[in-house]
Image 1 (spheres, rainbow, N blue to C red):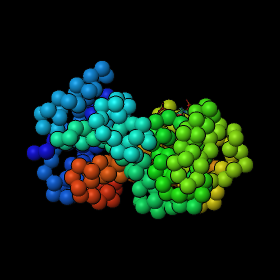
Image 2: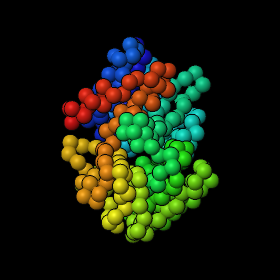
Image 3: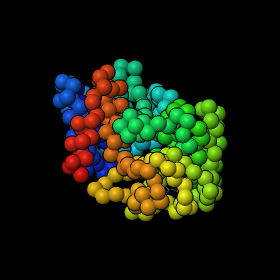
Length: 273
Ligand code: ATR
């Protein structure tokens, strides 16, 4: 049986084995998918041992996405742009590194939530790895504008500069205070603030009518960012559970050549939170 795994540290609470088992059952694919804990200093050795014992591919999660980027022999353009790898595929020609996070969030926003990005004013909060991986897919969707805002303004400016020639629009980068007076149709929280139950300190009045607030994080209750967004007049709010399922579907499609239906899997996960 073809073997797959998600590798990280910690990994025990990963939902990926459950998601991929559901995809496999639904599409009639014979495969196993396990959660693999790698020691912090032995990521590459753990990956290679898995491959050498019949592994076909892996998902990579915290804190190994940069090491996976280094380990890959070949990178997809979207992994190159993200500077990080969340999906590995093992083949005769070496290790392919891909990044499905950006495609996953775009699909959740545009297909599941039916929120168009094309022609809309988009604000991306954060300038770390999670934000970086979202920029190219956002630009590819041709928004009216893309603003990257970060607590440390210089990092947002650098990131905007780096992607200045990547799409039809040129992203701008700034600190949170400089957002005052602007309005956005889509605001994505790619900061890690929700991990500490905090929300980015944003000026009031950023949400246009019918706007969507999207948090990449998810949990049982509403994140601090989504609660603040609702209070600030966001038309709709969504957490990142759909992104998790969609990035998994994108990896599954890369490995197996068949795209699973994410809706029942997302509904089942949502019910179990
Ligand atoms: P990740 O890989 O999840 O993106 P990261 O690279 O450590 O993690 O980046 C974390 C991001 O969250 C950064 O943009 C950070 O802002 P700074 O660059 O100013 O550090 C942002 N962040 C973390 N906690 C935050 C908070 N409480 N409010 C606002 N931004 C926060």
